[in-house]
Each structure stands twice: as C-alpha cells, then as structure tokens.
Image 1 (cartoon, protein in one colour):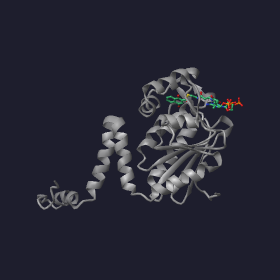
Image 2 (cartoon, rainbow, N blue to C red):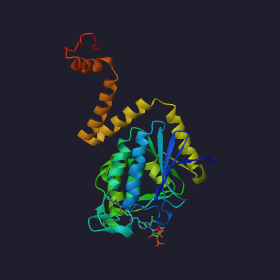
Image 3 (cartoon, helix red, strand yellow):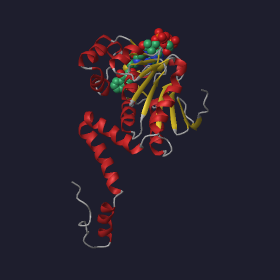
Image 4 (tube, helix red, strand yellow):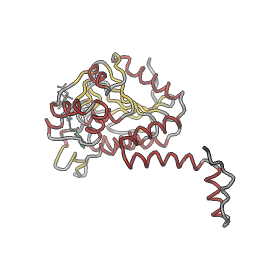
Length: 272
Ligand SMILES: CC(C)(COP(=O)(O)OP(=O)(O)OC[C@H]1O[C@@H](n2cnc3c(N)ncnc32)[C@H](O)[C@@H]1OP(=O)(O)O)[C@@H](O)C(=O)NCCC(=O)NCCSC(=O)c1cc(O)c2ccccc2c1O
C-alpha cells in the first residue's frame, strides 16, 4: 500500500515522518549503506526524544533508505582515535546513547530491516523491541575484523536472545547470516518479501495500537529490568511512581504538606 507519510521535522542525515500515530525514522545515507556519523546519531537522538514527547505517537519504526542496507554501523570514513569524529573534531560513540533511548522509550520500537544490519547497525536492530526483516536482509557483526567491538547490549543482550555459544560465534567469526537464519536464532520476529516489509510493520504497529499503551509501557519496562539491573529497576519504579501520582492517596500527602496539617492516609485501602 502506498501510504502518505507526513514529515515531522527536517534533518540532514535522517528522515522523520509520521502516519496515523506511527513515527518512521529512516537513516538516510544510502551511499554509505546507511552508516551513521556523529551527526546521524545526534539527529536520531533528537527524533527519539520527539517520539517520547509526542503524545499522539504510539509506535516507532526504525529503518534505512533503499533496498540494500538498514544500517552498516559507524561510518568508517570518520572513525578516528577515541571514536567517530564529529564536525568539531570531537570523537564520539554516541550511538550508545541512541541504544539507551530506544530501550527506554515507553513505546514499542520496530526495527524494519530492509537489507544489511551490520556492526553497530546490527546492535541498533537488536535493541529495538521487535524486528521485522525483508527476505534480502543480512545480519552480522564485523567489530573484530575492523577494529571495534560493542561489549554492551551488542554482546550481553545478543547472548540473551541467541544464547552464549551463538553470540560468541557471531562476534568471533564475523560471519553474515540470512534473514531466515536470524529468525531461527530468535533475533527476528518475522521475515517477509521486501515489498511487504512496510505493510507488515504498519500492521504490527496498528495491532499494538489497539492494546493498552500503559500495559505495553509497563511490560517493556519489566522486560528491560530483567537485564538492566539497577537502571532497569529505576525505569520500572519510575513508572510505578507515575501511576501512584494519579491516585488520591499520593495527592493527599502533597496537599497536607501545603496546608500545613498531618496527612490522613487512614482512609486509603491496604489491598491484600
Ligand atoms: C555493509 C556491507 C557488508 C555491504 O557490502 P557490499 O559489498 O554489498 O557493499 P560495499 O562494501 O561496496 O558498500 C557500498 C559503499 O558503502 C560504503 N560503506 C558501507 N559500509 C560503510 C561504513 N560502515 N562506513 C563507511 N562506508 C561504508 C562502502 O565503502 C562502499 O563505498 P564505495 O566508495 O567503496 O563505493 C559492507 O559495506 C560492510 O561490511 N561495511 C562495513 C561494516 C562495518 O564494519 N561497520 C563498522 C562496524 S563498528 C561499528 O559500527 C560501531 C560503531 C559505534 O559507534 C560503536 C560504539 C560503541 C561501541 C561499538 C561501536 C561499533 O562497533
């Protein structure tokens, strides 16, 4: 189906659009297999922040322009000492911030993998909540071949998904895997023909939009907490505090303070 995506904001290295409550973020550097520079990751951060703020956005799709690559990781042309060099000469590994933003966004993020998901691009799809891939997609890590590694989510979360042995194979050998192989390993939720990819992702997004957004938010936080330790508990606890603040019991505490009286918590239920 040909849907009319509406531009949300102008960026140089990504596209940021929406359609019926779904945001689509597209890494737009097809000349470099959608490799990211510090500018790309800065723009991705801006777009994910906006997705968090925009109340009418329920689900986010992350993809790359064209039919060759989702994302081939960091742009090797700007890889320097200490990181990927930005326009001011500062070395950065700012894709790590984008990974955290995706995990902490209280809305589902679908990786719409339209080709190579390699290196840092492979990690980007991993940290999305769901991955739907076209049948031409190719997955793999290259770090030990090109002088890099992601021992964070790129290793530990990968191992949670595919198991320790397979994760070591993926990193130690730097082989490439087809979409079907990635699906069998549990890294991909569904493989579809290339020209079905966007329709399939939009259908999954629309199904999730029929579900309770708060329930999805809480389950995402709970699934994150299992892996993220204290930071994951903080995220889940923050959501619990937000819900508590909706209750009269929490309002009573604040009101009593401002009215300079003792709070009356006795009337609130102590659920079994
Ligand atoms: C993606 C490929 C497997 C595609 O191979 P193919 O043979 O089909 O195509 P080409 O190789 O000819 O590519 C066409 C064109 O694109 C350029 N290109 C592709 N990828 C990149 C790239 N990453 N950077 C720059 N340019 C790229 C390629 O040079 C060609 O240009 P021409 O001028 O020659 O026409 C294959 O391209 C490939 O393997 N690409 C490299 C993948 C890679 O090694 N990526 C970097 C891994 S490291 C990383 O991503 C990384 C980033 C971080 O920010 C981190 C932060 C913190 C921790 C870890 C990090 C990390 O590991």
